[in-house]
Length: 333
Image (cartoon, rainbow, N blue to C red):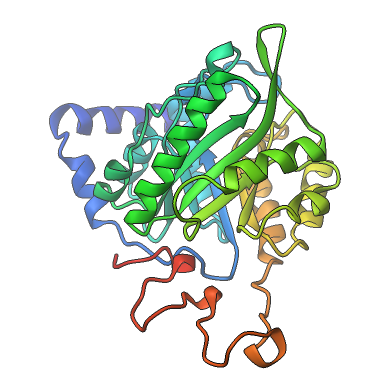
């Protein structure tokens, strides 16, 4: 552990032990922002430890050192082009106390009960943030994960996700759903990487809940991604993967995917926080440059795109004047 990491832990533990109310105060006073500034979104993912995923690259315990993880997160969040973070309450609270969430988009991770490596990984219980907790903390959205499989455990997770999507949408908060097509292989969960399986999973997840107005997807990069993305009109963020994978190929796949209209950005964690060369800032900057190339598409006017003159434009929030704009995160801050 570095001196900086040790000092971070000492500082945070002192605050937590002597003034626990400081957490809510820090969250309440943080400056917030619109969900989309440039038409794209780049978030750092830091919800892995809560599901027992501590491995990064060849180190099985890389993310176990909380001080070092926070040190790396602080570096990442300070880089230009990084819009915010996705995490569980323990990490979000630490970063709020450190003043690292000012003018950042913050998504709270909701279901972390599907511990990695076990059959009940499919039964991913909502053990972290709730919609009420996200709203009370002044966060900007909720994230959940579902592994679509032909197993009863997956059905329970699908039903719970549908409920969470409704709870968030009632509060005009975005619901980001990370989708995998999965199966059981000798008692362990395995993700299927073929396009057809992921397309089927996307179709199932896209229909969850009573409204899709605030629904976003978070998807793995697979072969034939352009065909996969034709399965949905929902705005989608790519997930990052593990730093064991070839970094040049990973970054290349992100760059190619940004040309797809539905792909609106990136959520990456271990690949950027634990790069092989240890240079977090360089890895984050390279990813930010790729996302920065993404711009919101120019939509056709009613005259060229059909529809009645004066009909609301979904991309601008639609509806009556003063209505919340889903693309901006909705509601007052």
